[in-house]
Length: 163
Image (cartoon, rainbow, N blue to C red; front, side, top):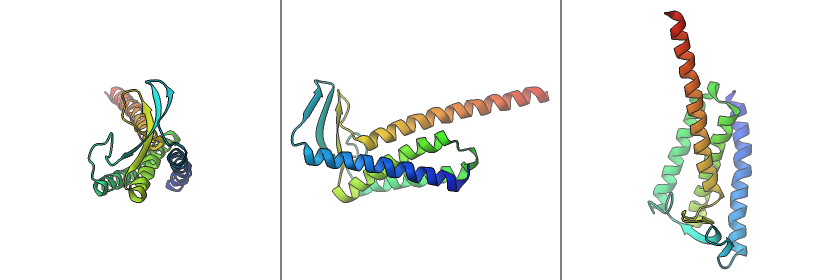
């Protein structure tokens, strides 16, 4: 894919997802005054300010912003270096990761912490941006491993033919 096409797709996806995340946080923050149990012991809407980077770990806000920015730079570097091998799926997966990271950085910069509100069972409280990050990384990893396995088979088949 051309770099210009990759970034056009990514910007559109990221804008949509960041807006969804930020609106969901604003709505929950302004409309919910106490916890709402949707499914007892399974799903609750609750307000939590998370100063940590993931699951409340590393409560250094500036450090967490720095870590997020470094990860974003690494992702953009990967995209630039792999632009010829990028599929639309990979662009979407990376857009999920970027949008979640950007939205959580917005929280850190303007709220001093990430606003989480979804509580499922024993899992730590999270938000829509966290879902984007986790799903994006999982799909990216699966896609990367699948593409790597195909490349290994192709290389092995070519080596077998040259013998």
